[in-house]
Image 1: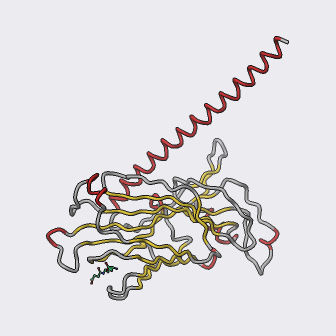
Image 2 (image 1 turned 180 degrees about the horizontal axis):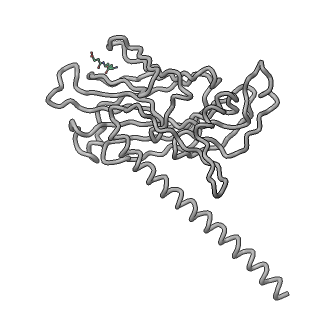
Image 3 (image 1 turned 120 degrees about the vertical axis):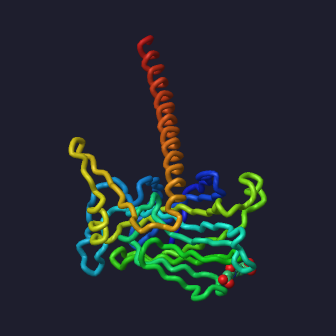
Length: 284
Ligand code: SLL
């Protein structure tokens, strides 16, 4: 049901061994139109900046959708593993955490009802259901495996569940060791995927509730902006995420500057061409 798009970006958030991918996952409702827009939203939950125009279907009680909008939920998921060093034994060489979080610690509670992590059957009660943030499971073990992640949304969101997979990684690759040195008990091995779940034409009730909280209007300019709610529930790796996300934001700022420069260059080229035409006309 989900469709992924956009380019992947790999980024080293700090000196830790890190892999990050950014994706956009589009959620389509059967009757919603197809959008190919890609969003970059630095501040957690967000939205496109179009005006709210409830469609005719929005007034139909049998189909309590819709607001002609896109709701963007930027999430990040993956794993974070520490080698136990002296504390390691044969079956417990690493402590690891598998997680689903809001990007920039954005609060996912408005949209998410539960996150289920399906662990390897060698773990006691391998199906772990979390109904509150932090949506994460921390365990100790010896081996890598695929962790199934199922995100369920509140009924009022009106979206299908989202299925993801996190490949638990405990051991750095040879090239990672070459780059960052051997594994220590201090440096976590982090694999993080960043995605934006996009809900096309969300239900009116959900939209209004979620957006009302975030909408702030600048008194002077009248500009509407969307603040994001920081999630208070602390992840075990809070300090690490803070560092990583500060770095991520810096990278995003640099990217924006670079894009702005490219736009200006292009504009200059067009203006120069127009000037040449005008000069030509003057000479005629
Ligand atoms: C492998 N396919 O063979 C993988 C399986 C399973 C890891 C890895 C259990 C720890 C415990 C654990 O780490 N299982 O018994 O508490 O490499």
